[in-house]
Image 1 (cartoon, rainbow, N blue to C red):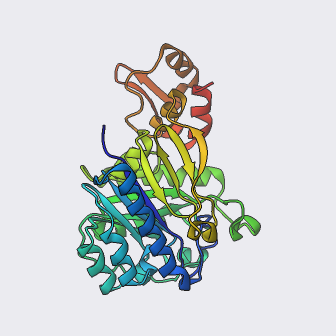
Image 2 (tube, rainbow, N blue to C red):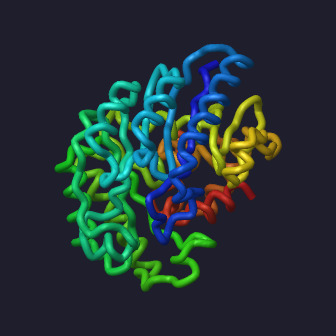
Length: 339
């Protein structure tokens, strides 16, 4: 069995984007105490479960690049990773010192939230109008692109995708903008493209990326050959992963668990909350259908249900998988397949 993966949540942001519902704080004075607690929990895990490297590791947020460099270096020093080691960052806070720290700390993949290169679209998302790609010295770059932004067209989306290709991105994540409960966008919705326009933008992105060497391997993820996110594939293949930080979710020993979105509880050393058993056949099926590889050996029952879903699924000698039309309606289609 493979060693588990590791996710560490960095819950600090200089400011929160109006569409984001990830747990984050703007009080940077808590950074030192937070990293100390993360280090304590990492050491505790090694003491109880053995000193073995994680298969993959991912530092997400929030905005990991706003951590003070000496604190980030201290955190990275505690993480043993034998494979893909990713950190998220914001272009504005990805300084030269940040780049030095992550390279020295073993990071070999960077994920950056571009969303759009078009100034008007960036401003509509509450971000700075200008995006300047920092030089980090790490070749494996993933860029996040948002679909369905107010005012976005296929032409403006192409401008953003062309920037991704010119920037040398090995991986692109293309997500439809969702109005998450509790966010400013949910409370005061912007004027978004209609559902048909959103669908057209998604299908346009899929087609453009495929024609330019980025193969789709999951509903919202595209990569050049060999650059698929191994960390996220572990999630979708129901592999085990540890997690650290408020709002972070883990899956170990056949059980799912999470840390409450409560910084003070985390700093007090309170344990995560058990969410029950995970990894059953239904969950594995649901996650596998997010991937273009789908299910290699679907049951007879799944095959029968697939016959009723027309152009949304393919079921042949290679297995069962969603079409792109099915991916657009993935929740509904997967729900029908699972009965």
